[in-house]
Image (cartoon, rainbow, N blue to C red; front, side):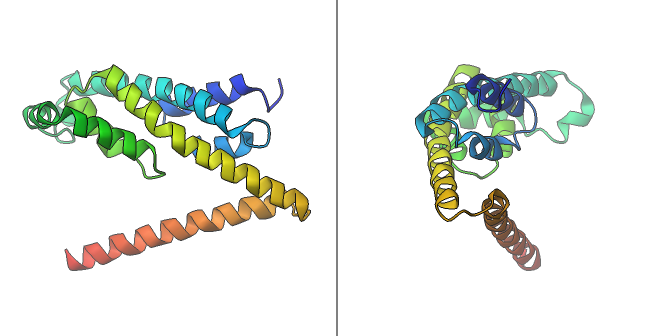
Length: 184
């Protein structure tokens, strides 16, 4: 089994989507040198939609289980159902746009699950949102790999550069959160 196998990439994205969804971007970057960006986007989006749908169904089952300790985490089902029912296209668009960005979509997933959002629409929103995001990440990773080969840069320098950018985003987010805590 070689790392470049597309089915291994898809299986990893299904498992990632069904669990904690923290390895999506690194997986795309890891497989970018082996496949065209469109392949990683199309097959990866389908795999992520399948995995995220599994997680979504499990989340709905947990929320519907009736355990009292879950009620303090779940918003009012009536309010959520009304909000989702009043604006189904807005909900779909919100889920799709959230998936098209690197921002975490867990709060939206929780709201959609508690509001009994249809699984098929959820999967479609994830699929359509992931397509441009996965393509952009794969395309940029390939260009970075090409530059690294052209300048004979070690792979760890490229990964370090991505890590520094990620640290910058995390530091900015923590700074904003601290600022809100002081003012709020």
